[in-house]
Image (cartoon, rainbow, N blue to C red; front, side, top):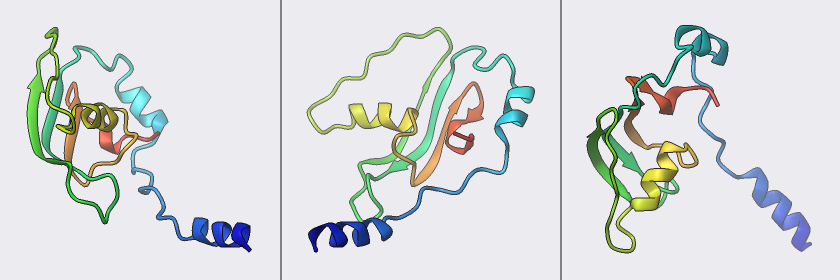
Length: 110
């Protein structure tokens, strides 16, 4: 019965976000040389690990200009790893945009 219970709980897992409107082929055709400069912008990024949990990144805004080298430092639980997870799209944003060379990566096809 335990295995049946586990199977039933898997049926209730929330689905990932729907595929974006732009196709991967269109993206490649429009931006064949992307990323060109390497400029990264976080605009009002709000992120939570699950919909029912508290916000872990709250309205984060910063810009890394092309060619800059940065370091992210902070105490345990400050959000350093979460920033990397959001850029890798391992965790989806609740709100805001992450742009690399002006393209919002949160809405690109996987």
